[in-house]
Each structure stands twice: as structure tokens, then as C-alpha cells.
Image (cartoon, rainbow, N blue to C red):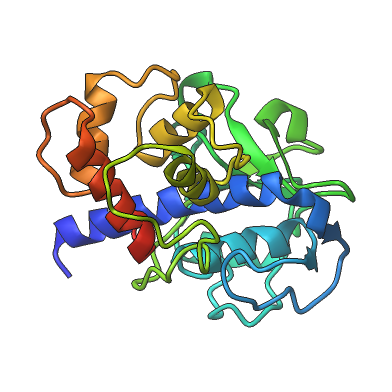
Length: 259
């Protein structure tokens, strides 16, 4: 595998991690908290399921095409202690400045008392958002400072697993007509893929989620830079103007489950 291919793989895995975590947050009414093993070995975005904080992190990694952070090939038994052990042995523990979206944060000394998935980088002292599944009613997306239950914090790098599985199972809003019309059906299919409420309105939450999915700063302003990133993502001409061909590219990718 070339360096460029490796970079593309981990970039996609990170996007998948954030999207899957936010999808889980949006569907927490069908997710239960319990300290049970094995954690569910189910296809991506299958509901309902029951797990704990480390099981949730392992599930998100498995769904997103990452390597098992416990190093045992997702046997359903990984937990904070095994993740700490393996990440230390493999030199995958990183500093706060090195964090990127999709990385893990584990709280407390070995074997750890809680862990979260970062949905933003915590570098530069940023109080990053993270996905936490530590009690009934979770998962929630909250600030890292709000999730900390004990020091020290160990940050663990997300690693690619080599194969990115199809994401999200069958999109209930697809297949779309590839007609270039950016109406409610296309918006709902996009919202489902991004893990936000499917109300058919291309509003601020959806715009920010789209920008995050594209690796952009989530400003909610769909400017020319965002449109060009979208156009590159759906393999159409990068004009910076969102027209019918851009929407058709999106519709094709959504139908193929490769958006």
C-alpha cells in the first residue's frame, strides 16, 4: 500500500468514526448501557444494542474500518485495560497535541475507569467534543472537560484496519432519483448518512455535519471552499458552484453507499 493510500484510508476511517459516533448519539433512545461481554459484534448501524464505554469505542472502531485498539481482531472482549496495554506496547499512545478526530481518550490509571471517542482534535488546548457512553441515556456528545472522571488522561491513536466496511447498512431514503434536484428526499438521505435528524431541511446542523464529514471547519456556511471539497468527494468538477451535477454526484454516492 502506498503512503498516499494509507493516508486516504485513515482519513476515511476518521470520517467514519465521527459519523458513526454522531449517528449513535442521534439514536441513543435505542442504545442501552451495561457492562457486559462480549460487546455486540453486529453490522454497522444495527439497532438496538447494549454495551459500555469501551465496548462502544471498540464497536465504533470495528464499524469504521479501524484496527482493533485492543489488538485481538475484535473478539468482543476488549476493554479499557486491554486498550491501554496494547496501545503502550505498539507505541500508539499520543500527546494531546497529536490528537485528531476518531482518537480515544482513556481516564484514570490502568486499567482505566472510562473512555471516550474524540470527535474533534484536542490539540492547542481545545476543549474538544467527544462521544461518551458511560451511563444509561448515553451516548452523548459533550466537551472533553465534561467527560473526564479521573486523571491521568491517556490519548490513544486510531489506526486503520485496511478494509473500510460499507457504512450504515441500507440507507432507508435510497435509492434516490439521480436528477440533480436537492429536495427533501436527497436531504433526508444525506442527513441519515451524516447521523443527524432526518427532517428534510438543509439547516445549520446538517450543514455543519456535512462540513465535518468533508474534513472542514463546521461553520455552517456552505462557501466555495466547502462546495469544492464536496465536489471532490463526489468526483465532479471542482467549480465551487453547487449545481445539478454536484447534486447528481451526491445522489450517485448516496445510492452506492460510498458518500
